[in-house]
Length: 304
Length: 316
Image 1 (cartoon, rainbow over the protein chains, first blue to last red):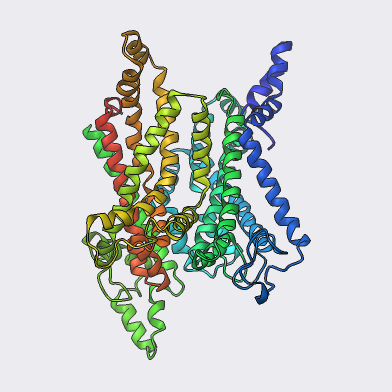
Image 2 (spheres, chains in turn purple, cyan; image 1 turned 90 degrees about the vertical axis):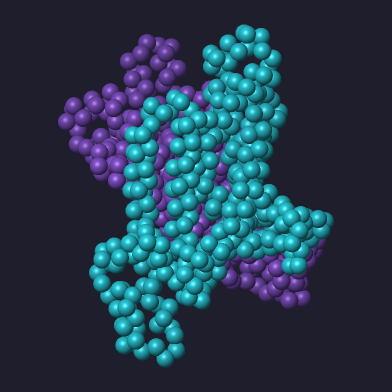
């Protein structure tokens, strides 16, 4: 985060007398305190941090490999014996599989977010700034893609490719950029008529400079919020596609395909279904709560 | 009103064309194109493939193909299923009622629950109930539908044995109660996300209205608080909900696909997955188009209803 929507006010603040200047100068610390007041957002952030750390370091500390098959230890229950979260139908340690799956799910979540935010921001920026026929055409394209329920589009695309982390990331990004584009387009359209943007144009700044340095910088807040929610969406999308069998393929674990596998042992080994679902819910919930908190923190108009 | 209608219809037509282009592109993205399936048939020679290609017009330039395909689409000829050569529209029509039944049940459940939760949350703003329902809605939005479905099956079918774990009815049992019994679990699972969405929207719609002058006037007239809320606030807060119903259609259709899979519900979502498995592209494409059409029609209808219900929109 390099800037907030308050940036023009902050530049202006240098010309204000003493106390008001002090009050306006630190929007960032005000944003932080607003964010902290949003306890659920903090909890969500803690969950994400913990999950990233656990997935990055956990597998190194557990003495089992995610693919190590131990038929003597099949269907070991959780919280008893050496396998903390129990084992699956092949005696593989569930905890280490959950964490390795987390690496994949989180990687796809972040990577798809980066791609779709980039694509959505570009489309939204051009559509919002240019307006006219170009803008209308781009936004109608956004509307048209949004007409398809995203799960249908995602599956239709996934069925045509050989699924791996890169291709799954690409198709999730391809079906997830529209929301960002809408947010950015709305922001840019509103910002481009503001005095600071007009001033930059009158100064003779190039369209590119105005778009990137004046307009985009001031739309960073809403973009960050949309991007955070996009991570949640992408993790969920990966889980859906993998659960339905068109995503990450066994033996590589992802939360979605672990749940697919758990379906047939629902009666005898429910923990195989419960833990991966909890991980998805925690990760998605974490990003949703953080996104919600960021929206309140970065939007100066929302009073807490 | 007439110009609003015309503008909105024109917009939908443009979207329809764009949607069809996307659908066409997806079909032609298939590795090897739409003919790939036939290349796998044993004994199929190159000459035969070429003849079939020619017969189906696949050797023409893409824009020409698109134009012909779009014409057939409008005329109701959506091709035949690769699996059993039944016309695509007939295949889909056979499955659509089950999906609609599930969706209608879930929407009814979600609207009633969501609106009630939203009203209570707005009336008792910042209360414990409000905080819990806000956090609960966010949590509900984070739960993957298929996992919630699995947990529901585990608890209510495997452990308690109260509800059937799948299908639309028990073979041989045609009583209405049998159908309702099978519908309860999938409808509740599909409704969960929608309850969350509706309660949030209803709460904020209520808060938009609750501080307005006419509400104060109603209170000043000496009306009971109950009457003020139900007759003045809720009535006006419900107006934007009509438009929302249209916006929620894509989510609902996507949720239906997943719910149908978990509960082996014989609807369009399961048909879509089965067709994907068989690489039955005409049916896949058909379902993509039908769902996009439903979404387009739904949002058009919701906008029109919203304009009819709210006289302020009519001028816009």
